[in-house]
Length: 118
Image 1 (spheres, one colour):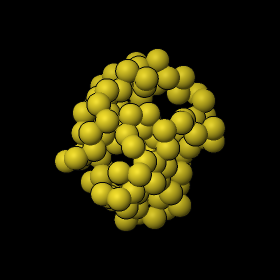
Image 2 (cartoon, helix red, strand yellow; image 1 turned 45 degrees about the vertical axis):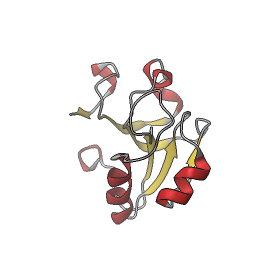
Image 3 (cartoon, one colour; image 1 turned 180 degrees about the vertical axis):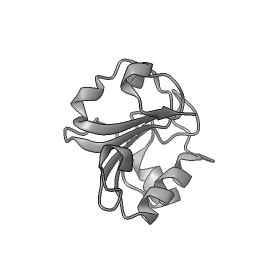
Image 4 (tube, helix red, strand yellow; image 1 turned 90 degrees about the horizontal axis):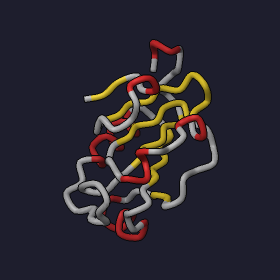
């Protein structure tokens, strides 16, 4: 983010996916919570979008709010954390602000739109 001139402190970050694995509603043992907690340690404003996960269970088990519908706002960074089918054809421009960082943990997005991957 810093390479693009985006301050991490106070940034708006969208995490795509929260479940344990793709196309499954199970949030038990999700590792995505570790990413979220680390970002929150940097005082980032994290929004979680997962069309498969139950927001009530996520709140009860992990203390996080998540949205089943894709937010309409723009974000400083987007992290694709779970490879749900819904994310494969996502128009990333809908949720980025032009200089946003896009990080693909699962390697499903086209290389030309991402800034990093595992």
